[in-house]
Image 1 (cartoon, rainbow, N blue to C red):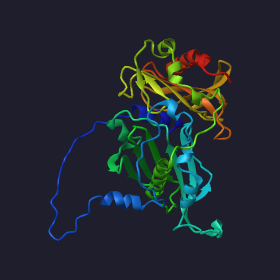
Image 2: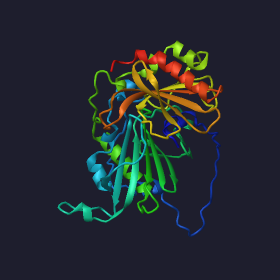
Image 3: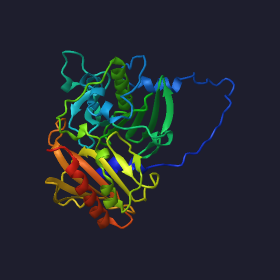
Image 4: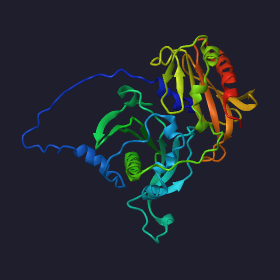
Length: 364
């Protein structure tokens, strides 16, 4: 899936939830699992002791409380060392609240102090994405992943939504303050023998351990960083009209940095304007989806069009200052329009909206 898809598809993905109940009588003489056995089995996959104690969350859904939170502080170096040795991450992550790590997973506990980690046996590479910017909208949306419905369980005072597929494992944590952390682990190739859910459980334990230990580390942001700004609050009615021809209501976004304007937030086909803060996509020669366009407000800009979908969305991205946590990346305003008028019209409308919003951004 394209980067646009990973950014915004979950905004629209809403599935019908079927309610069912059932019970099964145990067979005489057949051992029945002890209460909490399944939960404990999942915890046992972790290579980190998550500790115990209350876990409130990350500061709710408010941008002011989470704007400068460092997502990689939830899976710090000492936790990564328990799981494996670092390798280059090869994904296309673009969210500013995402921590991405590639690890070659140790076979067993890994090398002890003084041993050469280069000779320690490994099980292959996993790619880890930890998203600390998600917000809770409803039980229905919290339980919906990019690939379908997630299963829910309660662990201590945290709700955990899970999905396990070949080579992919998802864990989504929902805290008491309704902040969320999403963990997705993917094995890099078919030769990888590491279990993605073992890695995911280790990341989950790391998150809980860090949150139980005290405040999460913060980034030092430049005064003119987009991460300081509620960009959605800078979207005037003229920008919405330029994109949609009318001014439908603002809907809550899926992260602390995005929002959506539409009359039908649950319909992926409905005309909509989505505004977000991400990091830039670089146009590559021959790439049919990402293209450079004339600057907007004196800033470099690109469009991204998906080759599928009806109606197909168009994204206009306008770059800002460098995003220091990831060398070579820049903070970026993303303006997405879904339009029943067609792909080209969607791009024209997205650019028109961006031209209204960009002058309101902090100076570069």
